[in-house]
Length: 452
Image 1: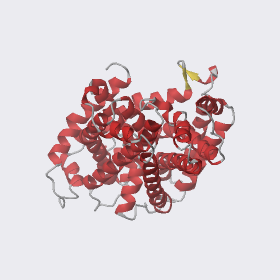
Image 2 (image 1 turned 120 degrees about the vertical axis):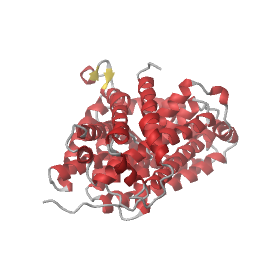
Image 3 (image 1 turned 90 degrees about the horizontal axis):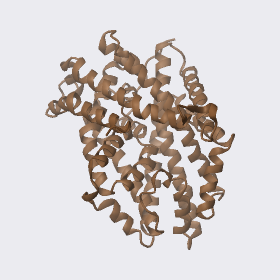
């Protein structure tokens, strides 16, 4: 039976839930090592510029589509295009989010396992031991699968409770905990001997490091950090009230998202500097380098080191969970509204589909030829497929749809809440979504393909 559509209950719920959809391992894991590889503060300044140039207009575009239609992503594009094929953009977002949820759960499962290993002190040892521990775990035929499925189950249990009782309530709990954990670890990290070298690296810009490659990396990080191109923001905006200030909410979400990314850098680099680990250690920084960093940094205070290590992996789990909840909700909302199924049944479909992807991706980390696609392990293939093709395509089409297809008056009315809000920035937004965002996304697309 068709039931009344739910919505977020408060402005705080809107900001925390939507920011939670953006905040994830991309902020706590990807952003620090990207900053480390690209010159620290100089990269951060470029990143903030990219948020203003690409992130805010892109976010507002999805907000406008979702709130106007008050429907799942596919129906939202269909409603605004009067039955034209634009609804395929919504289907693309749903498919992209489901694939991402499947392989993202594998990495999130690693974080969950590391939290358990940290609590039980299984990752204590020298650098070689920690490295071998990671390799042995990811190549195990059972453990990564079970931890990934456990993470999907956690996500499922939140989503089936609905928008207010599940997503909004979880966001109001998880986001403050995430912030508190971040601040505590940042303070502990900055109090270590020699930590200020890491702080200086992160906050003192070195513009000699800036080149075209760094700018393209900053553009890509801004695009992926805010979950553009996945229909997450479109789906969440469909739960906004008509009184929600879209520009104000987008600004608050972007600030919170960026603040968490910078705090993550302040958490990692001072501790790394304290023990002489280079800030450009790359993707291995989180699960291979940092366990040893914490152990060395707090060698004279083992209890504090233990607590910080546990809090750090709890932080990773919470950050990942806020993202997987949003990815799951996209497909759940679609099946609930299009097939008039119960939320529980719809969520089960998405959980099962993602679980299948999760299992095969988890098993593909070892050299299994049956799970290779064009010479890539399935996990890496899914990552590249979504990041290099599906996300940029979804983001580009959304910008064209809002900038050129939807009647200008409709876009203006949503931007200004029917003329009740100041429209001074509307012209800037429309120019950005018509010209600047497509150019930026094209550059990201070409950079991901290795052309630039």
